[in-house]
Image (tube, rainbow, N blue to C red; front, side):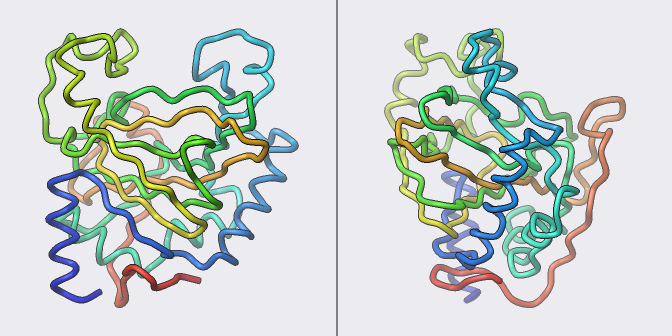
Length: 262
């Protein structure tokens, strides 16, 4: 990556809380990951999370719909290959100001939005259930196909990762309340960007984001994992500390718009 472009990416991430890397992964790799994921979804290979588990609803269609495949790092070498991809590491190290370390406790998932039976993902921060000493955590989202408003593309509230919101801004499940007047100006700032196969989104663990249901006829699949700064320790006795971590020391090469991996 060009040094000046890298600097601009860092400043944008620090200000807005996210970065979009267009055509960052080879479409052939995306297709291969998707094929493996579709087999695991078809046979419900554990561990999984259903829509019923996520929403708390006992609707039959939610009980039968898989929302995500968990622990994908250990499912197939294709997942590991992407999650350990060397050319992303210099940028991740720059954003984290430290060596990136892959955490397998959180995300580490193939996310699915199934046609008509997927639920809305409400505004939230990923760090709500994570337990680390600081917030140097970044999620890496890989689009395995087209993502747009109709099938539940991600939406973000720029700059929300830097804001200390009042306690009343969140409900009992730590969702950002749309009925709270103080939140409305923030929600009005929301942005969305259509993604194509191979596009990557990096976003901060404190960034508010959401996604709608899938109203199309085709499943939307995405692979997401999270990295932390090496010094950012998980708190003992929490889920964050219960799973292994994989160091990702930076290596030569990086991703820029228009370059491909794989």
